[in-house]
Image (cartoon, rainbow, N blue to C red; front, side, top):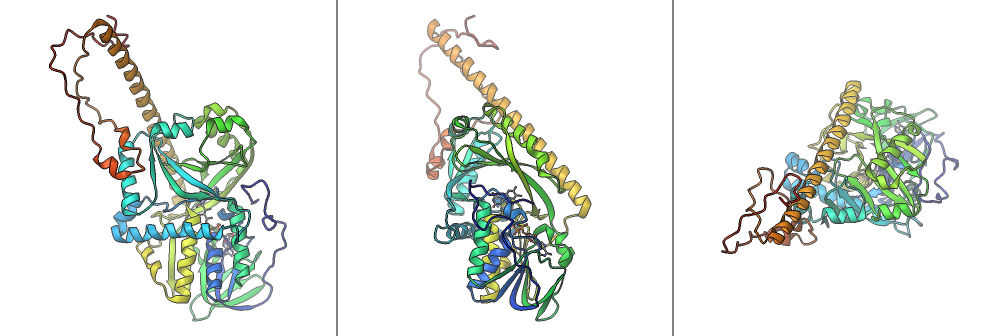
Length: 508
Ligand SMILES: Cc1cc2nc3c(=O)[nH]c(=O)nc-3n(C[C@H](O)[C@H](O)[C@H](O)COP(=O)(O)OP(=O)(O)OC[C@H]3O[C@@H](n4cnc5c(N)ncnc54)[C@H](O)[C@@H]3O)c2cc1C
């Protein structure tokens, strides 16, 4: 897999041509980490900072997996919606889990500071947009996040979303001002540099072929050397393979493909004014502007490893579908990575048996959650911190093997299909409402000219419409108390009204 940087210039340590050190001699350490992705490197950094001797064994090279191919959006939370987390573990534990996920994001921010990883160029803010018109659901989500989970969030009305994103595909939005984005590839290599500086040793081209975790001192076998360690941390994501097949089988690998356009010039700024990352609530598209006038976009998914270049036309089509005014776009680079999804949607963080740890299953939201996992596991190994037990209710569940993958692909396609249908329906309703408003305006004008009053509106049989003023929620309290009161009718005897025709020119 080639590596992708979201900045115009790659860091000196970011290329695959850099000299790699392979483990060719036997070694004794406190902690052996399998896998040099975000998860493994964070465990290594934290364990080394706390004074342990640490060796990281990576089968290919640093950032070879999903970690070197992500879009760099750092947000609080998990792949599993928070209401489902509450349903599973209860409100108090859900709050603690959420707080940990926020700490994970802040940990990434601290690491990515200019002093630790120079030239990271963080940009602030992420926007989650809805494909359907569900402002009322948004209000309860905002209230929960802001009040119960102490997260800075703002609700954006449809107009505000569309001021920033010129498309009729998106409706309301939730803005996370504390979320941010960074250059994903630079970050993973920066993390490796920090871990080395803290004393960890990282060996690349060193696949772990087997482990024996039964004794106090555990044994790790690689093609040309053996290790002994008191703790092993399995952070191999979906690639772990032989060292623990049963663990690998608890993950559904989903390859996600992303691409970047050629420079789009002024038309990009005219279409997308939002500077941070955008994701939709159905998890279909994820994009942001990079290098001033290029669009980085992730969308297609498969449950098998396909050639990323194949997906360039699909990404270009998707961009055109969402932003027709961008016209044809050229995709200059495409890449993909496998995110490991668990059956329950939460990451696998914890101790499998004494001294054998797992940090895996981070799905699509891996930056904050790998950071959190690394800290929790290192603190537990060295200080006896037991907070990883908050993840115990999310057990290792078999992901269904080949059948599970086929089912995953079908469910994914069905999810995308139903999201597209729901989006089309929402846009249709919106067009109908606009037409109704136009008809009402014409009717009102006709009545004004004729000196008559419009007929009393009949109650609508459908769902009540969302009071937009309640959605603009920088101050949530306001939204709770605001209620529109029905206007009092004047005690004047109405003259016969002008009737509304289906097309509503109101002149008959
Ligand atoms: C296209 C895309 C965009 C994404 N965008 C974002 C984003 O914007 N924000 C976000 O938070 N998340 C994002 N993610 C998700 C994020 O990238 C992952 O959750 C995260 O990188 C997982 O890290 P990891 O360390 O668990 O796995 P990996 O990065 O896959 O690392 C595992 C490593 O272990 C090594 N390994 C495996 N088995 C062995 C073995 N037996 N011996 C030695 N080494 C082994 C592999 O070679 C690999 O390098 C994205 C993912 C993709 C695919």
